[in-house]
View (cartoon, rainbow, N blue to C red):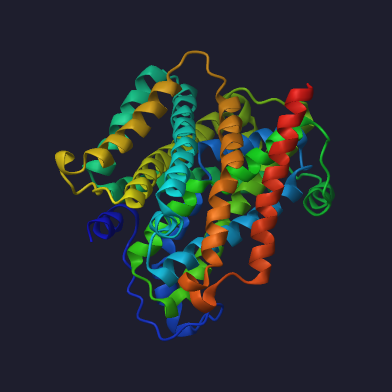
Length: 434
């Protein structure tokens, strides 16, 4: 009850789902208001997924390869639909969180390994959020040694002791500024024929860098913390199995919005930076050039505001969802409504993630945009661990009954897992040979 109440306060507005029996893909008119009511968490999850590391990684892909990897991004977005839908279905049909299910089915040892993987991956992503805060603040002439500590304290206080709902609205508004990438992609009038070819015709340079960036794109688009956040917010709604159709459409719409945003970042940077010979992004100032056609001299400010909002939003959500997942997995006391002495492990992990992220971001001379890429490279390498567990859970008839994965979902899910493992193997071999 404490978890549900806390997650309700932090992440979502409880929806009054007063609908009749809703089939999975049927969207009756009577359900329209209920559907609109539950859109909030889906949008937050989607925008949080397009965080500092995502913006940085997509920008690097567009600058280095133009439209060449758009086809891979489209496939990965389809994969994200599959993974997110599977997460939501597992939660709705079992009434349990993802971490709880992993412990129940696979035991303590596997759970400990999975949670260690999650902690490592999410520690790295948290670092990237504070790196994003540092990069954004320096665009405004504010030293990271001032902005990062203030942001760390503010994030900790807002989530643990303050009013997260108000802060969430502010962060969302700031993040939405980056929607100008969509406008910018049309203003610069790219070669749409080349965009279509890059989207529909698979092609990739046979180099270690191309493989590395492909894994990073998968890692930033399908980030493990998104699965645990979605599981927690879905559980918090108390959605009944017959109302799953609403959750399905909310999940799909959130993913498509996130995917569209990523797509147009690549198009905008490809049409501006790549075509003008800027194939390496090393600073926020360079990344901001993609917005110059629409924002002119305000491009850096616009980019900085959007990057700051995206970083603060994810820096608020990510450590908390990670902490909840780990504490849920082992049955430890959890909840920001708990006193510190009553939930020491919860507060310890939560605080540690923020402190680690902030301290690393303060290291002098950090290659900011390289960090974005390598953080999500690590995410992509570790992602198969979670995917294998989720696929096994979603095919468990004892848990899911008739709601086990379809053949289509299994083919895509296992295919994505195998592709990631193969790409990681290719990357390791190429590094050894080099």
